Length: 129
Ligand code: HEM
Image (cartoon, rainbow, N blue to C red; front, side, top):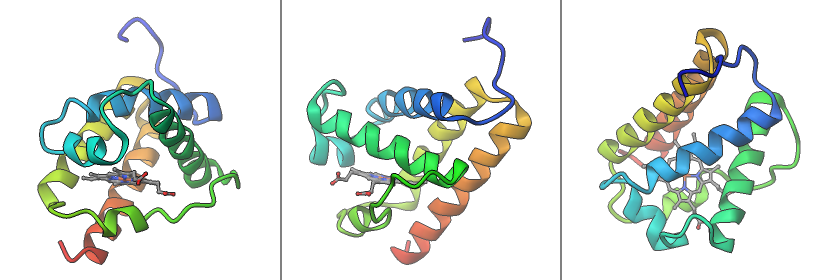
């Protein structure tokens, strides 16, 4: 990672790379992984996970670049998660920000980090956490 220059702009290839680097980390987080395993299993190579990675790539391309393939409802699956907590969101964000920092410079990275924090705050508010 350290020998690669950091991205100074956001584009569809590095968004895909970000998403694909983030979820393997999520699957190693004791607090957050169980929510994903319950829905998608623990094999990141499975068709269900591939679908999730594709959907989340589309989501971030929509958020950061205005692409229009994403047609989901971002909040909905989280509303049905029993036991989700502020601590779980905090771990999710920490790992997302860490993954961003490994790839993006300060300007491009801060956009993605601010957006993710904003969306997480929104989710937590709507989940009454
Ligand atoms: C502790 C925090 C979180 C957990 C445990 C979690 C878990 C999950 C799981 C398990 C799914 C798949 C649901 C399914 O396919 O049935 C999902 C979907 C999704 N998550 Fe999260 N998530 C968290 C935080 C976030 C945050 C902060 C964001 C955005 C910044 C986000 C964005 C999304 C999106 C866009 C989807 C797809 C929704 C759809 O269109 O169906 N998640 N999440």
